[in-house]
Length: 418
Ligand code: ZN
Ligand code: ZN
Image 1 (spheres, rainbow, N blue to C red):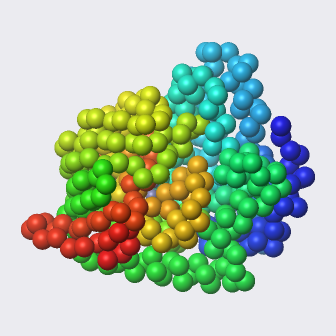
Image 2 (tube, rainbow, N blue to C red):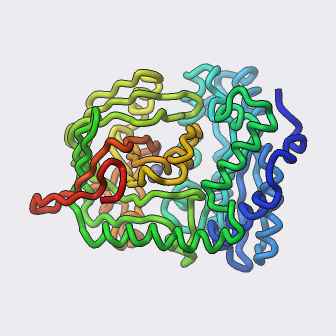
Image 3 (cartoon, rainbow, N blue to C red):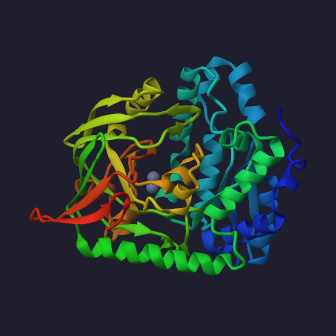
């Protein structure tokens, strides 16, 4: 079932893998001399973890501490673990991570696990374990979502994930194809990846500045199955590309990234919207989503596939039925052009305009780091244990910006910047 971690590494271009590690440290994290690094990764990503550790120490890292998860150990829990155990989570570990971030450690997460790993397991247990984990993770998540420190997410082409994206291909071909797709999307396929990121950040910042200058009160989306008005939070700020964390370091949290995004108003969303790509959520594929909003709240939710899981997600807490993010992505983005469904939000959200249910980003407000949680809520920021992005953009969607006085202005036409 599971290949030896080393046996497929020949299928992955070693030069590009090393460039990805360098970009993660120099662009993604901008790791500073003396700064510690906490890394989380699937076991299969060990070759990338090692490359990153080397680049981190070369950049002057203090202490690099990796934590690994293993798919077979996760499955062993579901197959043999005591039922009472599914309400537990490693809170002590997350508290320790939170303490490391308080001490200014940077955080790097490597994704690459099989998105469908838990698809055959008892959904009740999956839901309980996820809920327990989300709650226990709060101390660490607060520091990350609040941008207290510089952080970054990159991807590694593990076999189980590659087999899902390229079904029917031999193992080495699937891994090699996913590796090349990750490298292209992460802009490390050229000789000067750091320069490529500089240019890309400048392009994203130009979009961001244009939107921040407009100060739209709302966005209106129209297209097949979609007629949606998303009010923007009072004092919202658009972000995109590299941004400064509270410790003063300007980092690129997501690699890849193609989005400019901000905080919608949790109580000012009206109309209906249809998803344009399937959403892979903790082992379940949710497709054909159609929801209707009233005063910011989802009052009706349907899906052609995974409807039960979708409705369970919406019942997580009060904020799970409201929006916490709205993001604009050109339909011609490289990830969109690849035509692949990655079954992973890091990639799929960068293929299309999207919205997210749940928690908002405090950084997506003007002077966000000085606002209290109460002020953020009063300005329309949403609060939830979840943050789930799903895609609503395509080449058939038009988006208008609506000014406070009702004037409209085109933002996107047929999926491209107007
Ligand atoms: Zn997003
Ligand atoms: Zn998001």
